[in-house]
Image 1 (cartoon, one colour):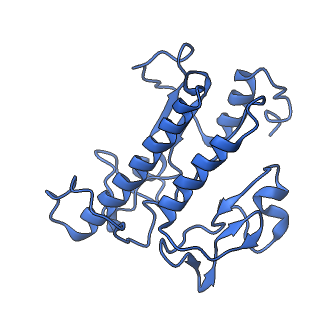
Image 2 (cartoon, rainbow, N blue to C red):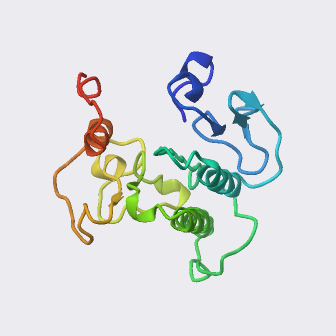
Length: 214
């Protein structure tokens, strides 16, 4: 969430969301769910203590929400995994897919990415099982470029997280919308996060006049 933790007015359920689960700070320990020496794991504004890795818990809860939704209404799910943000912590099980990586930080980072990638696959499977995959707009993006000191790579782009070079500000963005967005297309027009809300509102034929009034 990372949009206000000290003031409850800024918590998700006070900003338009019907339900919230997970952490509110900019990062969280994947196993203890502690942020800056305090527990940061909530369900609808109430702190809870749960066993489990944050990535796996978020995946499971997203699946539960999708399955338990009101099937007569459209739904919006915003899932912000903590991975692969620091702290670098190896997932509960080794995928075996990154054994060729010799750098310690890079290996852990890659395993964290592999774990949440698998979680996304499980969520997509759930959406498909619910029969709405081809009627769902799915967006994947990142908030900033990778932190090089933690084992990330921004390819040929200069710099990384915390810098204004492209390595810090240019991030992946993928859209899935069968029958509307043609697969395999590459968009070259630069966009920023502010573009998402009015674009999505227009896509579902909702009033976006307030969203475009910045």
